[in-house]
Image (cartoon, rainbow, N blue to C red; front, top):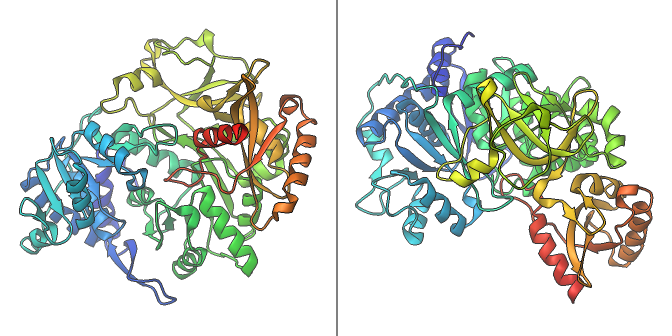
Length: 555
């Protein structure tokens, strides 16, 4: 499939509708789950037709090229048809995780200054109740029945326009905005990341090249936006029944049932979801014979989780863990075989987590740690092999700016005038080894600076996570007797009796003494359940843990 000429990510859909019109593009569950779960579906031809009809309706309603449009529709056939319709007309979908909370949602939507709002009735109710973007919205479309006179009903508009509409996707300029995707807000108020169609197309190219995905494969994306890449990759998407804001609480039986029913070949899941499915699958002796690959991102995946999930898969299958962020994905990738056979031992000794080599077309460097803007990229400022600093990346899938966040953009981007490009500062710390692999050492904002030394989260936590009764740990800094000192918060595996807590802490103090970089850590607290991000339920909110830990040591 030669698609180099495509400028609009939506152009893949009509191309697939011509090539394989009867192939199912997407399956979506309907109603309550049961062993005979009913799924509705669109073939590529049906999705193309429905998105064309919606594109014509949107265009007539004033949702056209450059119109920023909030899309708050649950994963469904309408969600996919609407998203492609928005891309086709050249509108700019504004996508925010609803789980970030009403306060953050209001802030994000005020920043985005949308003109249009397309949502389910519940979303429109919240919009009115909380005053989301009330000063900028002029086009209101509901996917259900109208609640107010200023709304237009999409089902009613579709009923009035049942003709076979042809709607050619607009041809965007190279720097024209395609979408605004908000970050998960794991390190503060979510920021709107400006995507161009070229960013999306570069992502598709990278995913296809790295994972060798072939047309005709079946995909289970437990992060709905990833399903939008399926037409570009010639895949069928199966949307599982789950609460997409709580992947860590997913019912593993529903995931496994979908994989087995549709003979899924590829699945994406956050580390929290992968762990939950792996634990259940191992208990039940499940074997997922159709899976060729699993992809997990959002946070480092524990080696024990990789081992457990790997047991569910065929011998020649693999788990891939790409590294990246909303602003730049993928940056690098590594597979479970490499982790389990080569890098795991080093992680457990405090060397950080290996996230693999940069993907083709992406350049990665390490710069000195600083909180200040870095206006110009200088090759001679890059750190040597093995030195820990901030990870910076450049490539076609790397986004250029945040929307209405000039200061955030200034802090995050570095101009490389000599090579007519720019670098994005990941906000992550790490180093590059002598084999060209990237090692992740944690967020820059999470490092703990004491009077004696600077400690990085992932290298410290890696040595304590080896304890068999520990699920995960988190390094934070607290004030004790006017001194800033490191402290390790501990989340135990389920079912550990409180009477064992002191013995576990004594074990951890012994482990700390075995490594130079953890020898000064003497403070440990057991926490019932770490706060985590909404999107993946895997990134630990160390800022919240630090506040909790400070309260504990003062009480």
